Length: 369
Image (cartoon, rainbow, N blue to C red):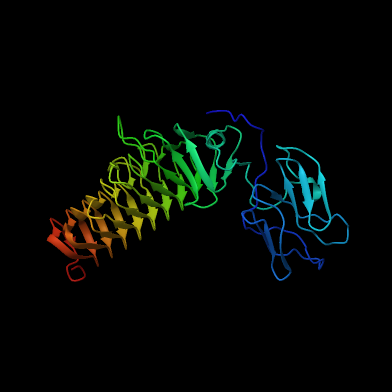
């Protein structure tokens, strides 16, 4: 684990979540949000205004004592306190935590550290910090020239998955999640991956109960999302692997048939040379568009529901068990819809070139066609 070199424990930012404050002096807290990307304050049924910028910490305050909270921000970079239509003062410095009523940090979703926008060195140091448990990554492209090993941070949140990009400048580097119960969301990882001596995806998980949500992988040499045999019960929700023809490991790849169960919900793979989903368990509403390049849509996967494989070159589903309401769309390019699969119900294959079902057993024939 690497020690963070910059100032310790910087309070984070409020991300469009409720903040308890009374903006109209009626004795009740109002529902309000602060949107850092625009500096916008929106108070339900009261007002909408602009104050602050990305990186500011929202701290509504009542400086007059009249019972009305006013929108206010603290800017850690220069110690600025700005209170709407009231005052601007400088008190504090970078690394300080602004205190709300009663001497406690302001309520809401805060992060221990906010990465400097577009600074790849700061990003890598923050994610490998021994001090921070949560890190927010603003929109921007972060160039990184080494593997990042996350072994202490428990939450990594990007501003948006397609505008918060970790760009590995050379193949062979990747984002390694080595901390159990870590949540990664809103991040796009681009241009990394590894093929030798072992395949590694842009995102590689080695710890238990890691959740990856609303993330993307693109242009990887090794593949999109991968997890090791030591990674128990990883979860992928609404993730997208948009790989190049060189991607050898495919989209989502587990280690082996004996690996601890995974969970994939609403994930998609587009255009990889290997297999889209392999050695995955418990898949729901997952989708493959192979662009006539991906060999197999789903390979050695178990417990699939409402999954679709389109435009694969060999098989839509191969060596898969317990499939329900799954579909293969070949468009005349896929050899076989379902090959060596078992326990199928309400499945369908269309526009295949060789066979609908090959060496499949326990097929509910009246509901599969």
